[in-house]
Image (cartoon, rainbow, N blue to C red; front, side):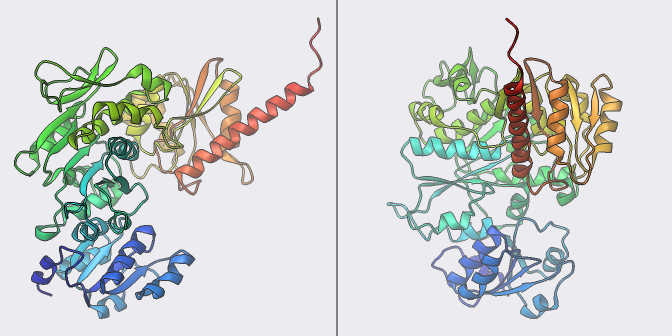
Length: 511
């Protein structure tokens, strides 16, 4: 089709009727895209290798067509459908045969984020304009920062919704009849790659944006570290007001310097050091804003203190960085320092993010199962030096050598789990030979986490910590990082219960 019609599709109220759209994938994201397009009057074909029973039942109800089956090549049904647009779920990589076929055939390829941007005016604010968008990405800390930002904005009096990669499709937020002032959108590198394909009418123009940090991840999906970095950098493109970056991570600064932004957009830095006149940072234990302060050349505004954050379990260095980034985004939208302080008094981290699950018999057990890559695991190890480190899983092609040589040297011992155990053990042999390493091997009927906890309890010192921070994906032995964390926590509780039962059966001590 001509690009003229697609260029005109920049509103919920545009003419979408009869547009032939193929939706790839039928998870929560794929269903939200199919549901939206069907509501708009498009002709929708959904292709997916599998589908939850509920989605499979609903697709014909909404007026779309569903075909299930292998997608390792371009199905004839898709060729016959002759789509004018393909909307791909984030799991479809740039090298997927259907994506390559579409690009070779000059068929427009969108992600759900571009579709949501084009129809963002379904529900508008009192002044007749759609919600502002704030974009958040980074190798680690995205979800925490997204939640923090939304919480701060709401405390400041704005209607804000966290959405995107956090689990709530942006299309669902856009179509919410209650409407919002701000959408705080967490973006994965996969979603950002699709945003990078957008141009002209489909290009996003965020109010503010941040890349929290950058470390190698998802290299198989992107094909290289450079491609992964380039995808992350798309978060800053066309930013209108504030490009927030991590002063301690040079890659994010370079992204901002290289970004094509709207004239007048400011670069706002954050780190754990003393802030400059356009930064947020920490001064004598006080989180301070020198970026959004009229007298920022000479003074700073207090947001909260590290002591107060410690009381809420938020004082780990990487969490403080997330708080500073979220504060910068919230301040760019006018949120008062007092509102930020109030928001932090009630905010709590999600499960499986440096979550203390038990303290018993002199041992602290910490679940950071969400540390699925080396960068996240390094942050946890720095927060708990000397810990017994539970590490390993599916490495996704990532080399742990640098992690082991740096933060891994501080571990009291390593318990190695997962399909890629051999690579992890070898990394310790090369780069941290002084750290005791135990390879956790279980029988067919033995739960791996039960064995992990037994081994860890046997070697942990009084006052020590056992830290689950795998630096790897979970799907080799678990259904998700949450399943991995839950099974670790369950094993710890069972160990505690067994110990309590043993204590109850002991004879009275001699007097």
